[in-house]
Amino acid sequence: MVLTVAHVAKSYGSRSVLRDASLRAEPGQLVGVVGENGAGKTTLLRILSGDLRADAGTVRLDGTLGYCPQHPVLDEELTIRQHLRLFQIAHRLSRLDRADNLLQALGLAAYDQQPVKTLSGGTRQKLNLVLALMHDPEVLLLDEPYQGFDWDTYLRFWDIAHELRTAGRTVVIVSHLAYDTHRLDALYRLSDGRLHPVPTTEAQR
Ligand SMILES: Nc1ncnc2c1ncn2[C@@H]1O[C@H](COP(=O)(O)OP(=O)(O)OP(=O)(O)O)[C@@H](O)[C@H]1O
Image (tube, rainbow, N blue to C red; front, side, top):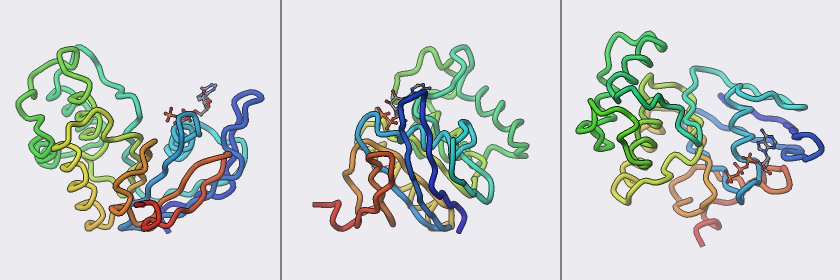
């Protein structure tokens, strides 16, 4: 088991967001977490990524991590290429082959030399995703990863997700939309601060 979340609780002041959230994910699994706006999905992913501390419960995550936050953390003045170079240094990558392949797959290559401030919302989100994937991490936490994507890019996203699955990576995808759940190995609905397993076949209906 590469990711184990047990009895996680989190409150913001008197507002209890997570009460008893538990989840398990294995290598080669695509796991979806759905829930209404404000259900606590981002809070959960921030806890899993180590960005936020839980009040109670345990998180065990083995392996390298790729985190695609809901809101891209990009430098407006830097180009796509400069972002890749920055993350190359941070991840100590000798090459950018994988990043370049991802740029191609998501149709970003043409914007390579453009500063982020000139990019559309969907294009920024694509860069956000490339930055999370470029070091080929073992565990991926993706918060609304296809937000703002056009249909073709949305389908490409799922191609990439399935490649990750085949390569034995563990992918957790958070979304407020519960469609295309047949593409997932497991699905949880976050409500009342708990993660309720949903049969993926049932969720298709
Ligand atoms: N830093 C914070 N301080 C106080 N309250 C917060 C903070 N972050 C989130 N909340 C509150 O916690 C609740 C859950 O927020 P969260 O962003 O985790 O939900 P979400 O399921 O990701 O929502 P969405 O689908 O709208 O992105 C919301 O009521 C939100 O207002």
